[in-house]
Image (cartoon, rainbow, N blue to C red):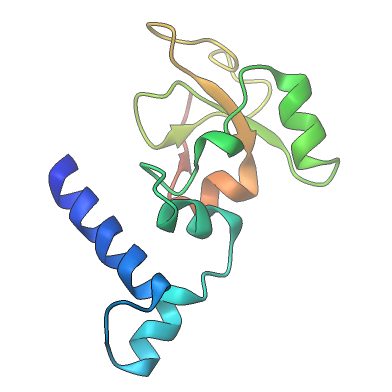
Length: 115
């Protein structure tokens, strides 16, 4: 699975760099991502939520997200996150876990869980 993902990321990188010819409508979708998370994925992040959008502490996440975007918590083991007030908010398993902006997590394919 991971090897397959790396092949797709390499293909996207080639299209973005203009070294792979493809129909212009398709190329536009790949070379003009509309979110920071999409641009991170093309740049090589393992998901759309790259390391520059994952925070170890809530203060750093708030500084990045601003007041209008809630900060969510992911345990790092899935594409799920919990919101403030959840009993598992801020609790990591096996030293994984991070805070992120809800909008960026959503753009990257993460989703709210019951937590």
